[in-house]
Image (cartoon, rainbow, N blue to C red; front, side, top):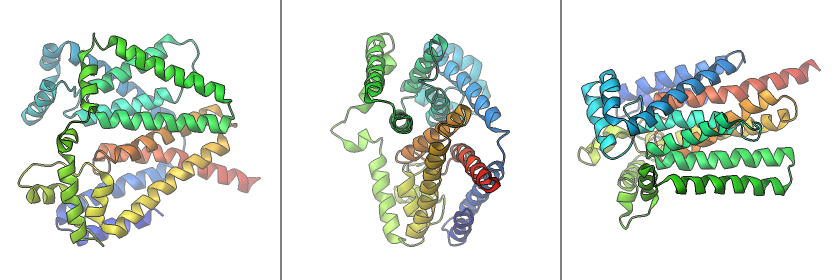
Length: 360
């Protein structure tokens, strides 16, 4: 199954309109997916990986909130870590009220905060009377709001609701518990509304969700990019323009906008890989997701620690697949390898489950 996307990427690189860019991406993709394949045979890295992500994301949350309240001190302490080009980008984001934390992009900051948030939210219902735990969730949400990334907020909400839909479905809990869950979400919204006068960033985020009269402005220019990408797909519908070529082709097509990517993975796949490549990659991603869902169901009443790790994996996969509608996680290396590593976790338990059946 893994060979199909790798082979197709090398083929896409060979016929690409930007061969160096395509081959470079293909090498990274191949290394990442082979790494995930190797790790899927072991489980001794799971806890270290999850704990490391949790620790690093806490640091990002603290720095993000610190930067919001102590902007000048943040610039003096952390700006020396970045290049002059990155500093220009960071200042532009910060002038608009968006926090980049320890990265040079709000997307990178929001992504890691979201992954850490997934590790916390997957434990809700299993933690009783732990003030620090629920305070941490609130701080993560606040830090995520400070990035002004609407797409991450939407993706987290959908991932959270899906994971807890699974929780209720597998456990057979009564609908009464669902009302308590809805009450908890409503209470969180009320708290955010109460504290919004103390944190203007919440008002800024709410304004970003308001649909403006100009849809292209509302989408931050994405609709123009989508339109051009779809046109390029129509020109190369079978094999596409070549993997990871979207940025420089669209840049030329739209007159030097310095576009980073298409900002929609599914449209980008159609444009760069054509119908054949898009089908291959969607098939593999959906298959991994469905297998993760099924193995969680099989282990649900067996081991709590395994259930937690599988819930986190499904949360991250759901979050990643939803964010694909708004961002570029498929061609951003840190996002891609994170997806592969979390996907490797359920693959191990599928392997282990099959081995247990054979041994019995």
